[in-house]
Figure (cartoon, rainbow, N blue to C red):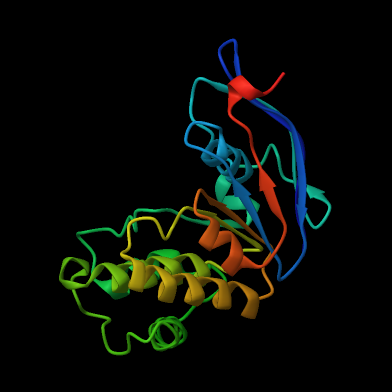
Length: 216
């Protein structure tokens, strides 16, 4: 499976954020996109996922294993995204949050419960199915958020600075966990960050985006 972005140009009114950006991410590889705030990194991921903000215009294509998904809605692209905020539903238990992410092909109460238990075990959070997310630590919430994304069985993974809100010790550990989980599933992964440590840990190609004022 390969994630490819072809000739992507993003604009807000007359202002161009990105111009003619192309990249390809093979299975099991992490490509890092770096650059200062406001350069369009998160907007590039939003375009890839199909969730570009209103008021923005875009040209270019998104391809998954050679298939053009540019015009498909987010839920049909098969692209998972993990944000800096965990975005867990406060009115749901941990299990409820994970159930929300389960791929629709997984049916039957027993199979669904088993999938949730396996996900929590992988995240080193066994037995927390009935916990209120508000009672979890920041690192635990981040792991639940990742497992919710992975339970949807994405064909590609987008990481929008998901390590930024964690302290240094938790950041290193969670970063290693995320990257290992993505590689274990052989997912093409696109990481947006401004932290060189994230890029070094990803150990893949790095694409540097320049500020708008620096582009001609």
